[in-house]
Image 1: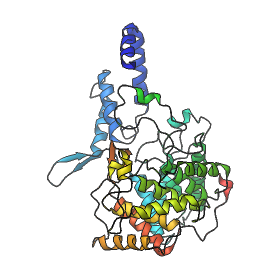
Image 2: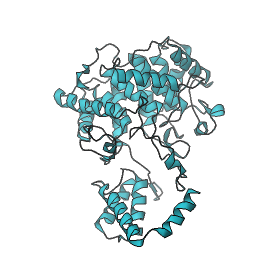
Image 3: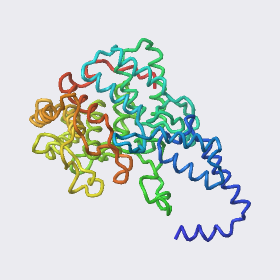
Image 4: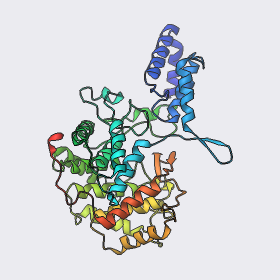
Length: 423
């Protein structure tokens, strides 16, 4: 009905007005082209932007079009047989902060040159100019990090939280620079909190159902409502920064508790699926001060124990996004999903449990000689069910994090919280 109405109105719109509207749309697209020629740092919006501009009359030799086409080459991966695949996205910031956390939690000294080098790179990637998020937060100073190499218009809350958690694990030669960057990131994340106390990935209160009714919105997510996994990562970050008792953190904790599924799990928006959500939320809740005996944590532990595979690992099929009753927490064991379950159980105080012992044994038994794990399955999520991601580092960083915490204990457990004045 909406589509028919819009097509009927189209005939009534004067050509001059339509031309002005299309010119405005083209200007909006061009203004958001990144310095590397791409849009949004990922391949799909680059492709759509090039198509849109070409339909609006831009020649392929136009500088904007040439830069856009050249940017697509950076997503090409050459296979051994000579064929070329095109990646949908690349995740350097996300990979670097998770790798830093994994290495630190595995026992690498905080001043190790590789950790300091990673911190230097992350510090250089902080975005200090406003993006489209400032439409809803015009007075909020910038300070977030993006997922990609070049995406200054769209830093995200999840990456920012994890980068702060990574930087806090590094003993940097310029602590003032480190603290200033962390302070900007924490303030930006706090400023992006939605009204319900939780966080989405890119925007504030982005919950309108209207975009989903548009006729062309037939693939993936078009809005960015708060999610349990992103909110959990922010809560964990705030707890490490000494803000566990801040009213904003407590509101987020209450939201997380209210979002727990009846079976004890949490939904995973950006990872597959209930194992990812639960593996994110439980460590955040305990970091924020909830004891392992809290009823919500006990329900999560019971659920994780109930879905452990006979081989000792954990796995979850992508079909859990469509058929949760049959597939939530169910699937072939994978290294990353086993690690998420272990991270939750360890945070809940279950280190001596048989479930943890069996999970650690599974990781040890399936590790390859080169130190990695085989993981052909997709355990990352772009759009639930519609767009799944096989992160090539997940099979290393999450098992290493889980095993490191099994050996060395929970991170930050024995250190005083940082001063909350920064926020």
